[in-house]
Length: 203
Image 1 (cartoon, rainbow, N blue to C red):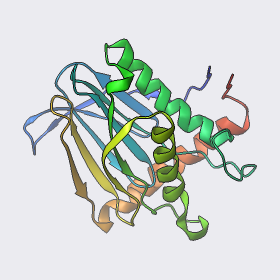
Image 2 (image 1 turned 90 degrees about the vertical axis):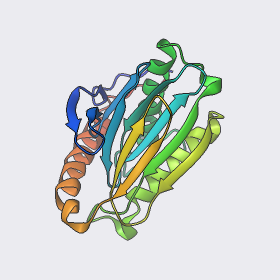
Image 3 (image 1 turned 45 degrees about the vertical axis):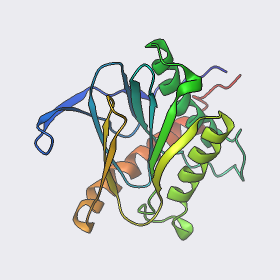
Image 4 (image 1 turned 180 degrees about the horizontal axis):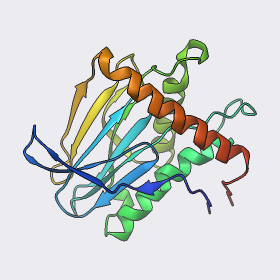
């Protein structure tokens, strides 16, 4: 399986989290982060989903943040253009974890997001579609899901502590929705355009 897609990047934004009094990595839409060091990884999710993966033996862990692009050509199935993007978002995180020394058979998953917050979608199915994809992918790859908080109507802020695997969730109020929806809408448009122009190659 090979991909050529330039919309997934390693997260580089660091900030000081005053709640936990430590430096943290912020993962934005289309980014991921993997590490063998003790880190706090933070992201904010609307319709997007994040998968926190960790090998409890080695302590290596990471998180991604992605949204399946819209693909008017698709009906359903793992080999649609949008699903191939989801596969890539998962594979790039898993591969990076393995390069750091994690074992795929040991990986444990915690999955979050998929809220129905994007406007203009029939029955607000974008979050549902992303949630269904994540569950299907992890089942297919035999990666056990240890906890999840998916779908619903509220955005989430996710705090992932890689040394212990602990995840804390904060549900966000309506005041946070507008900027989040704008960011995810721009991201959705960007990745959809890349998909239509054939920037994903699957072999």
